[in-house]
Length: 126
Image 1 (cartoon, one colour):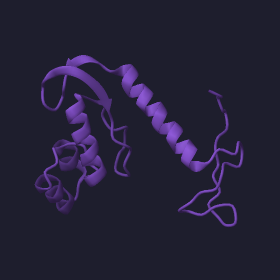
Image 2 (tube, helix red, strand yellow; image 1 turned 45 degrees about the vertical axis):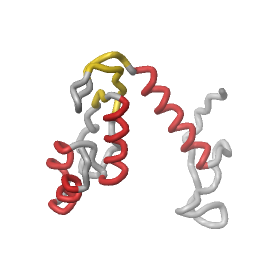
Image 3 (cartoon, one colour; image 1 turned 135 degrees about the horizontal axis):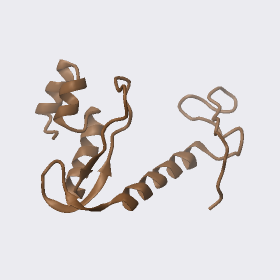
Image 4 (cartoon, helix red, strand yellow; image 1 turned 180 degrees about the horizontal axis):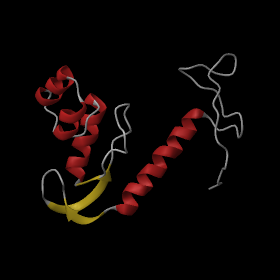
């Protein structure tokens, strides 16, 4: 794999690109889709490299646990906490974040509006 030290700047104005479809990097020429795929691949490598036998923080089962950390949100003053979750709970937490923006009840309770909290609790999320 080629290592790139490019800072990656994707044009967002026509004719080179748009907000919904950024153009190729002005420095190295990588497409925005390839850049996103590379970031996802790197995140997966970190998740697999840091996995270990332990206790899931959600279900308390002894199992192989994987690192879970939701993306930064505007209300975060520090990085979101790293949770160690079994594959089932990791999947549930990722689905909850995609649907609601919150990984668990504590996160929703501390940061959600009243309507978001109600949707989180009654939407079947963890």
